[in-house]
Every structure is written in structure tokens, then in C-alpha cells.
Amino acid sequence: MGIMESRLIHGTVGFAIGDALGLPVKGQNAAELTAAPVTTMKGYGTFNQPAGTYSDETGLALAGLDALQHGFDEQALIKAYQAWFTAGKYAPYGKRSPDIWPSIETALKTGQSVAAPKEPGALIRILPFAFFAYQTFDTSLFQKAEGVKVLETFVHITNQDAENLVAAGIYMQIAVELLGATPDLPSAIATGIDKAGSYFGTTQPYQPIFEAFQAALADDKWPDGSATDPISLLARTLKALQSKPDYHDAVLQTVNQGGATDTTGALVSGLAGLAYGYTSLPHRWCLMLAEYAQIVDLCRQAENSGFFPKYD
Image 1 (cartoon, one colour):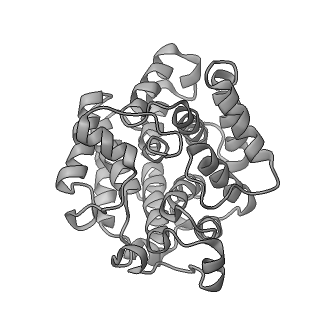
Image 2: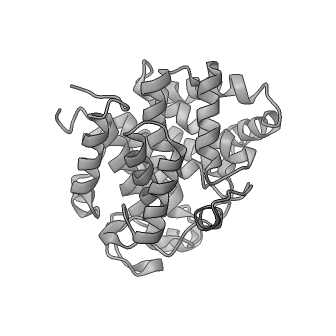
């Protein structure tokens, strides 16, 4: 299989690039980034890391990808996340970023997840699960009790709150639609929201959260750039993708809004890479991405596992 055909590589490398673009300016606000915008991959900045370094978002996504290539096993997922947390496995240069969402740190230190509705701990981990879900349930996870249960188990590894389940479920379903019969991004967003809403919009305690998400997405105003709750981050992600139908422009737009820029950069870029394919990823950014070859190798392993889609 060539790299041009591998949807898993497109989404995963895209996700990592967006993370690495945003990491050096994490915490800056929109005014600061208007004065000195991100226009390409750069280094150092907030965490004093070389250009191309990615953060906990990508490290956790890669850990999940590695675990899921052996099937769905909650303990195997926890073990993979802990290998990232304690030993730097899946991290750039074998050393994880000190920046980590507190709910994830709590879960990996104590073995107990907590409700953290202001943190996107499950949303940032969901992309590899989307590929696994498509292979296992096609585009119909929300129509199957087993599918919903597996999604809940995955989310609850780090986050017990309903906000993360709703946001992660919507993001997952949009990715699944892109893998299925809905190849264009606007249609995948609309269909993904509808299918996720068939469950979240009719089930408590998720209904008001789903309605709040719909309102945020429909609002002409963009969510506050400093917001870190999963619903605001998801709305911001989808607004960027709807307003800029191009990988390069969508990720730079969202990064230059400031706030949790590694998170928003990754979320936008995962779906954009999946939607627009490998040729949409700027070649120079691929060359600068830390552990690029290792990421590609892990994707190929997953595709050969039988638990992920394979494009021969």
C-alpha cells in the first residue's frame, strides 16, 4: 500500500502536524498571534522544544493506536497510556511533554478516572478509536448497544463526564463518515452530527449537552479562544473546518486564535488530513515532524492487524 492511499496515515500524521504547529504558541492569545502569527512549523516558544515536537495529544493518540491494533482491551489501552506517561514511549525523542491535562494525569497516576468537563481528555484520544470503530461497526456504532458500550469504556478510561463522551462521540462519527461513503468534509460533518445526535439528542444526561453543542456550532461568534471544555473545542474545530476548506489554511487559522493551540491544531488537522489526503499535508511540515517515520510505521502495523481499515 502506498502512502497516498493510507487513510490512517493521512489522519494520524495530519493530527501530529497540527499538534506540533500549535505547541510552541500554546497559551498565547489571539492578539499576540495577530501581531506575530504562526505561518509555518517553528520551534521553541512556550515549552522550548525543537520544531516538529508534538505534545500529549499525539503521544496519547499513538498509544491508543498501538493498543487497538490488538483489538479492544481496556487494560491494554491503560498500559499503553501508562507507557507514554512513565517511560516516554510514543513521545518525541522518548521524552513526553511536561504539559498534560490534569484529568489524564490523575487517571494514569491513580488508576481512577474523574469527571473533568472543562478538559478534553477523551476528545484528544478519540481519533484512532474512530478507525477501529469503522472497521468493527462500519458507520453504525450508535445503532448498536455494543458499539455505544465500547465507546463509553474508551472515554471513561480518563474522563467520566458526559461532555467528553458527547464531544468524542461526535468527532469519532465525523471521522467514521469520512472513512465510509461520505467522502466530502461538509457532508461528513452534517451526517456525523446527525448520527451521533440520534443517540445523544434523545438520551439523558447527554441531551442538553448535545443541544449546547448545536447552539455553539450555529452561533456566528466563535467560542472563546481560552475555552478548554470539549464542547467548545469541538465547535471551534468544526467552525475552522467549515470556514477553510483546505488543510493548510484551516490549521493555521485555528492555531492563530490562541489558547490550547496544540489541542485545537491537532483536532482540526486530524479531520482535515483524513478529508483532504496526504497531498494536502505540506511536505516541509512532514519532514520536520518528530518521529515521522515511526508514526508511519505504526500506522502500517495497525493496518495489517485486521482491526483497522486497510486500503490495498
